[in-house]
Image 1 (cartoon, helix red, strand yellow):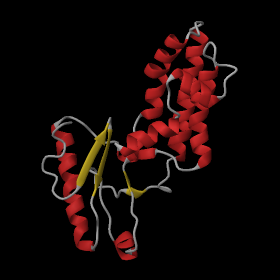
Image 2 (spheres, one colour; image 1 turned 90 degrees about the vertical axis):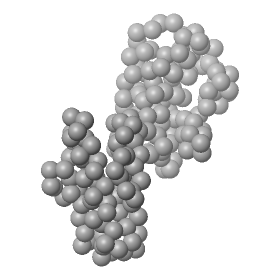
Image 3 (cartoon, one colour; image 1 turned 30 degrees about the vertical axis):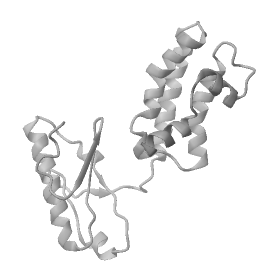
Length: 192
């Protein structure tokens, strides 16, 4: 993936895991072909590397005041289909799925490991659950209180199961275990 940006002119390309984002400020309808050209360059790279982008997951995000550009221009997938506008440009479905998966792994860990010693529990947390909550969080980091609380609840519940932590409040548990809250972790990553 190190050479995916070769030949991309003008657009900003970023990849995280298997997600790739291509962006370019569009100030007039004349800028749209430049972004399409860069998209075509990325599609060609994928083809050369025996890779196919999932066209159902390709979305466009448009914001700004130029309504003419939003309504009168389009970008195409490699297969020639028009790229659809993201539903609401929010990540609430992704956050709910991330919480569901993290809770599932948490339940599996608690059912299969009877030892509740802090060192073992933290090792399991850091290797099996935290990566789910961290993956690509720079992109989808929530700002709504309810979504922040949903993510925090996974760690809150898990840390309560660690030996010697049940009678402490959440923030006391975090301090004693040397952990950050999930929100603080995301804020720290975003500021780097």
